[in-house]
Length: 529
Image 1 (cartoon, rainbow, N blue to C red):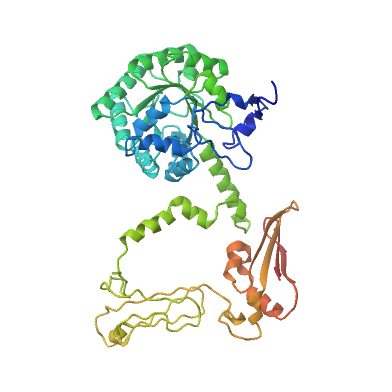
Image 2: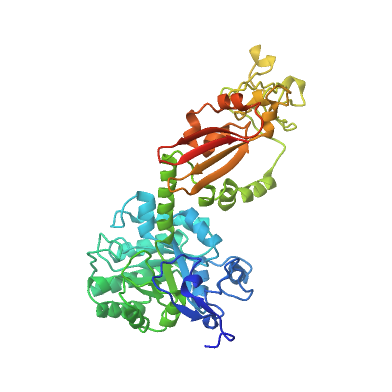
């Protein structure tokens, strides 16, 4: 191929944004990327989708939803995705937060994973422990957290054909765009684990027919994904027969789990060619080979699920964080989002903006007795945070004047009410609570000119070096703000930092205050600069 006519990108690079463990190098020309494919050329610095790309930007999908002037029903939105060209990736979520992250990452839809929900909600394996009610409840939390369509894992319908009908109707009410139904016996389990068993052909087909009837009775257009686990339980030929029968029964999407090779995947995609096919790329060692999206599209797939990526990396991240905490450290800054980023992800900023629409001049405060004081339609009190401040709040009416005295103790609260309550009158006057952090006032936080006032112009440097010699942390905080030290390194909680600062306050230049190894063998050093 002429390098001037086509750019060659590695498979790992094309999939780097999803971190799939592909075992060997593979290259393909970017000329194969079609308009409408979910994959676009990757820029190592910034992935900016082309304006006319269908699946690399949520704006295109939002335009599809907005064409009628309002948001499409979930099932209709999913069907529009199925009609678009290319293969469409769907990570599997397990709660509202993981679903929200999928949407923020730009994916146009997602799945729920029974495996992951059982793990996250129950802490149990996917071996039939989780119930219909728990799955519906979790699913409703997920669908309400996002605006993209969600395909729900309906397991085996939780019983016979009548149970399947109830399951489908429940998933419709929960807001799902689609539902996956399988032909396993009860108790069912993950399709890539040992000992899979399936019901008879007749019962398997009846489950799909019951699902179609439930959809009609509900007046819904939920997408029915018919899954068979007969490849591992019986044979490839049996799984192909059941897929044809499911298509004839009215299934919208076909899915054979745990296919063992690309040849089997190709044979599956030749069945009922007009019905979309779904692939399951089980990360980390499933029975089905991991295939990149371009190859999946060439084979004939329309949807591809990634069931374990989110729950898997979450488990590992939590394990690493707990190891750090047990060793007396907090996770390093680069391993977790900042507090501001977390608030943005969860919608705090949007909440504050919307809250302004309903702001009033009337506010309510609590009295010392724990009950609600009378509403006060007056100017909101001004509160000054800091130590050694005596008068912190004053309402316009002198009779409602409130004084709050703040001590220098960490997070201390003192209340002093006006003399009307002390005379036995009804306690209707408001009380203002002020909480202050533990700041080292002896060093001039209040602006005094004592011998230690210069400490606020100096910093504490905290450095952690691992047993392997690599630097794990190197941060600086104001020397006067002592609380920040133990927040960064809990192992310093029992150290009298104030006494160390007393000894070093008048020294010029830097000084090593602490140098020790924690229980994990990491070296912790604290410098005054």
